[in-house]
Length: 158
View 1 (cartoon, helix red, strand yellow):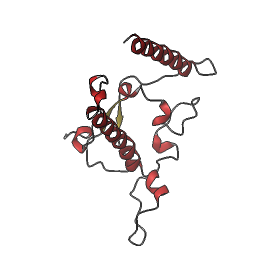
View 2 (view 1 turned 180 degrees about the vertical axis):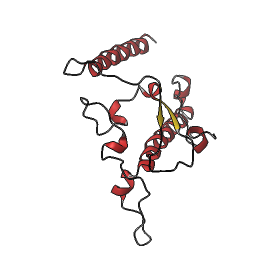
View 3 (view 1 turned 90 degrees about the horizontal axis):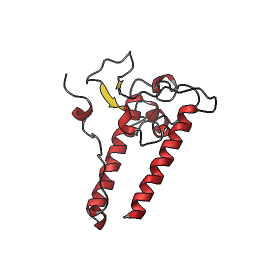
């Protein structure tokens, strides 16, 4: 029990120290990290068929920034995924001769990027929770909230 407590304290201290380094950066300037809810909407040229996603940014602070912002250099401000030549395709890539679309183009399609990142991560957490619940560890290991995986969970009816 004492080992577990010491481990949790050590992790908390490390997290606080690491977070301070991220905020301070190498230049000594402070970095603005959105604490509340971020509205995720499709690009302006796309007519949305579903409600915008209200993304609880602070809920995801236990993950490294690079988990989602995988092209961020940790120095410049984070830009929209559509503005960084990362997920900048606004229409679904076409299949080629009955085969799947080019995987590189598919990953650049904004909708596929969000869905695979968000839903993929949430499904992975659900699988980890099932494994914990099906093992002896369920008595000792609390499961984390997995987050939404269904359409209306993120895109509520307007």
